[in-house]
Length: 253
Image (cartoon, rainbow, N blue to C red):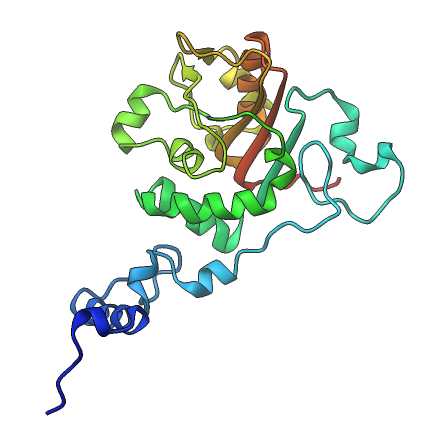
């Protein structure tokens, strides 16, 4: 019988392969996104295939909301989508990894509803790559808060879990002053009213003169981000931007 080398002499890749094989046999874990068996459970709760299936937004993108534009155009007025040209936004610039669909949606759901907090780090890494223009020369990251009742039930705030892995100092500057209906349960026209006056600054939080990056898991109509931005700007923030894991894309009519 050939003796295996001492643990310190076993390459880390080999040890990981052995560990993955043992976990796959003993626990039979499945991917939190696609529910297929995990071949490499030590690398996290989502398989490589699901991560590879995430479709990141590609330029050209709206300079304000980050939605994909239909084609390359020239001129400052054409660097924004029709919706952003038609109304003023409090969030100066927004970016997301990609559309809230397919594999990215499943991964976000695994973090948010499946309590897979370890997904906060890889999502933050993708957001850092895709949102470099939002993070550039920003001062702080501020997660969109949950109401304390919802955070108590869920056990954590997914936005805060992502924000703590971004390359910016994070501060919990905002609080949610009242419980609101989930935005996903409301038609687009009712979402701004649902979150109006639902946020406030936390005591002793200071954003005066700072460029703030709001962080959340998903942007749908942007109503929640705009409501948070209003509070931060009234508190003296110089500029408010937004970075989310996913975004519901507005389709041209």
